[in-house]
Image 1 (cartoon, rainbow, N blue to C red):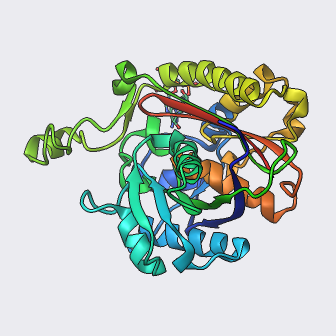
Image 2 (image 1 turned 120 degrees about the vertical axis):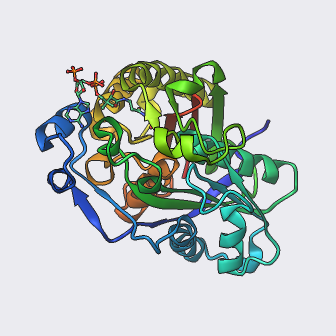
Length: 333
Ligand code: UT7
């Protein structure tokens, strides 16, 4: 595919106001400590949505900012691709609620399930729709209300996650020449043989909601942390290599690395592998925890807002999550 075909015209984020610090777990009777969480993950606090603050609401806030920054009206959206592991309900999609909230009357809207890699999967789908002429303008969202699916009795997972949404508007790149802005390369992989290392075993079509599901708490997220950690380090390293190769670049050409924010130790290992110094790596896991597919677009929006990502910036985005899925992308802004 001759690139770039699509560029990021605007970004936004929707973050719940409520902040929960590591110290707040004591009040819930969770046996943990601020020191343990910081040392093992880098997380200091996370945002938690109130009951009425839905995945669609957070998405709408992110989308409105992204559309405003891009100078795009809701009526101009051809498609809404919403990545989430926490849809507001199972049928129909959260994306159609967002479509209705925005009044995006021309947009096809659907949810995408690729866990923490979902935003990069969504960006790749959006680029593909633009490449085939199906769309001119695509809204890509990563939105998660992780607080609704973590087991608040399981200290090994409940301290890790947070809520939020991030959005990007993708538009067709005009003109030609490889110095132009846009998506320069993409990479996606998955390995379903490892699905049970990070999953919600019950409550789906295979084992619909019943007393057993409730008793076993099998509708909550379960994770084999150490195994996931090792795979994340290995797969994010591969993903960096593949996106850099695809763009014919090296780590030296990258102005900013925007990794999925799950654990600062995974981020450091990824940066080291890609030969990107930590002063060129964006870390906000300390303030948000792991917001799954929202983490990269939230980080990107913060970088745009502070002016670190601006016209001419070359960024490497890389993610890993349940599935397992992993993905990467080089974008010139
Ligand atoms: O976004 C999708 C991808 N997800 C990830 O990338 C997460 C990957 N995994 C991780 O980030 C890390 O594995 C964790 C942060 C989840 C855990 O860190 P770890 O260094 O791998 O710790 P561990 O799971 O090996 O547990 C070490 C000890 C255990 O105690 P014992 O068996 O050594 O006595 C745990 O029971 O820490 C204990 N532990 C806790 N202690 C205090 C587990 N959770 C906690 C906690 N507070 N919250």
